[in-house]
Length: 391
Ligand code: ADP
Image 1 (tube, rainbow, N blue to C red):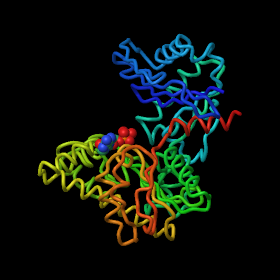
Image 2: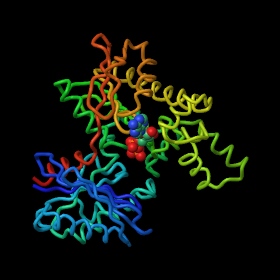
Image 3: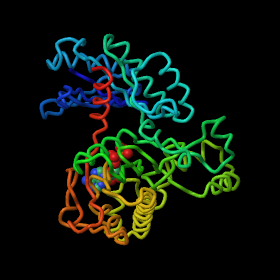
Image 4: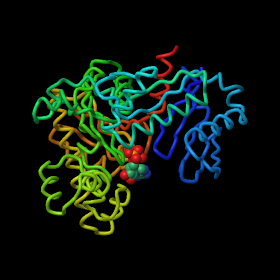
């Protein structure tokens, strides 16, 4: 069965077409600058082709994608695509798993746009374009928040007036759930059992860390929005909330302006003044830049403090997993984090850690908790959920 996995951004559309349940990628690619000018890249049989073309909207992108699928003999008719799985960032407390999209699902995604104003409308654009172009496919919504719905109340309510939770839906939702779910299922396969305590570290430009018990999320570092938690590329992560109102007064800033600073001008970029990209931070350190060194130390401390917190909350850990751009590739960041976890009896294997983007155990055999690199695969998780819903 052929299943299309889609991740729509406001001006982009990432896709992978899978043969399921074989989990084989038939074609993948990315449409960019939709609504601006447009180009797309397609990867097929190990070859990558990029084309420039006007992409007025997501529907145009979907039509071009379908034409490419047929021209390249990936499908003989669009009816072969049985389902389209869509990444949707915010599902509120309505959804604890992926669902088949109907009118009610669409209106709830619209409703939750208040909490994800950049992401949910983009997801809806992808869903509507898919519905109008691939008419006979079933559409599935896979929510970033769903995996975290199993958190107990004491971990998702904020210590603000309790009515805010009930009346305004102010609570911790958590994000990157599809990735945390994927790597926590994979680590359980590696460990060979489901009754595990696992800490999953999704460290990319956006980062979050989750505590997962018996395959279910019990806590996560992001909050109401993806601004909270560990320090990120341009997001501040956890800060004293009163700094925000103080600086708004001081600089006469609007809510939009301060949100922009917290989300786009903070994190590694804000501290270093150099870059949001962890590679540039590591290069800066090598060139003696003290603010890059400060940014890296702060990043490592913030990751370590969440791992330590979740280690205690879980009553120990059977494994710690590193994934996403930094988690899979930054040898230096993994080394610094694991070396700081020495108090927990965790010991890095320097040689094993010298890898990028491959699945591997990176701690020594006498390490009290094994640490693994597991490349994430959100697209596959979306295809798996879609397959399981419609099979
Ligand atoms: P996003 O949250 O945008 O999906 P990614 O998961 O792609 O982000 O992660 C981006 C981060 O991964 C950047 O900070 C980048 O420096 C880091 N990264 C990517 N490749 C490497 C690499 N080869 N070595 C070190 N860091 C890397």
